[in-house]
Image (tube, rainbow, N blue to C red; front, side, top):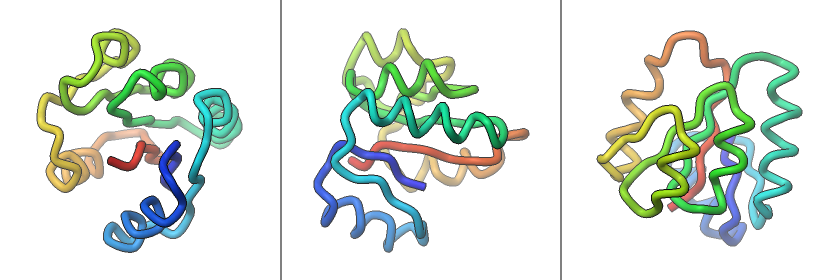
Length: 108
C-alpha cells in the first residue's frame, strides 16, 4: 500500500513500478494517520516517510522509518532513520523486517 500526499498520477506510476496494487493519493497528514490507525487494528505496521508531513503517521505506526535527511522533525518522529534515500534500496531491506504485515511509505 502507498499512502501519499502526492498527485494520483505520480503515486499510481510508482505503485506500478513496485508492483503495489493499493494506493491512497493526495492525502493530508491527518488522513495518513487515520489510514495507519485503521491498519493497526489488523496487525503491526511500518510507515516510511521522507518529510515533515509524514511525522504524525510515523508516530501512529508500530514502527516509523524516515528515509533521507530531509527533516529533523521526521527523524525525531521515526524509530528508524535510513540515511539512504533510494527507494529501491530500502525496499529490499524493508521486506525482511520481522513482524511487519503492512508496508506504508510516501512516494518520492
